[in-house]
Length: 226
Ligand code: HCB
Image 1 (cartoon, rainbow, N blue to C red):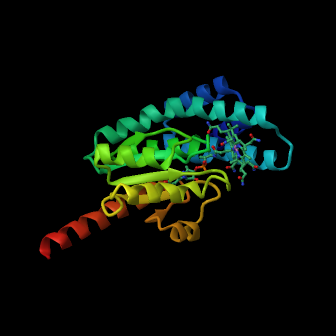
Image 2 (cartoon, rainbow, N blue to C red; image 1 turned 90 degrees about the vertical axis):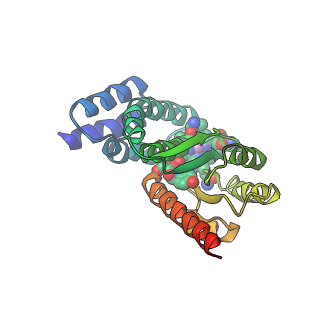
């Protein structure tokens, strides 16, 4: 039964059907399927299939846009449930999140934000196509602990470095940890640009954010001891 639901969810994304995706997300919750399972085993595999078909020219931009709409529609339903879980947890840290300048892909970054919120982080999402200076200004305003930078295009992933440079220019780099992600991003790339961490998916981003917060706490207590 659960497998059938997951398979229908995947297909609703491939077919780009927001109403069907919404209805399947609602059904999943009423059947007691964990929202994260619906996302990871149902809807995200649909987006992956769309990416593969687009790469093989079996699908075109309007189809991809319809799929993105369907994914958003499902997330609207599932996000509420996930965020309710986060409201009951102690504040884990402040995260400023965004997609790099020149890049309009938002779905993965939103998923990262939702799971961070569900795990007690206070998340400020700057949206997509965000220049480095805007990340730095919001990190300063909120005294952020972490800046999370997403990039989905090989041409825009280099802008992740400009976010780090903007934080350096604003003298914030020593206080703010930077985590990067997005389909073309790798651990090696993160190291190359001087980020503090890389996460392959939203669940790993939560684990990474917790680890970065531990690192911050340790360096703060070390500073006090000195
Ligand atoms: Co877009 N697109 N797209 N696209 N798109 C990709 C990314 C391609 C790989 C498709 C392909 O060719 N196979 C490709 C990029 C090729 C490349 O650069 N190597 C591509 C292209 C080419 C384009 C356009 C240039 C197409 C065109 O106009 N000709 C154009 C870009 C315009 C621009 O940005 N300037 C474009 C447009 C679109 C839309 C608008 C139709 C739509 C986006 C809608 C939206 O987000 N509002 C779209 C979509 C949906 C995709 C695919 C199909 C899915 C992306 C997605 O949502 N994945 C994608 C194919 C793919 O990625 N395989 C395709 C699902 C999420 C859950 O995964 O990887 O985004 P994610 O995020 C993960 C993970 O990376 C990590 O956690 C997330 C959750 O698990 N993570 C982080 C992400 N950010 C993080 C930050 C952190 O700090 C930590 C972890």
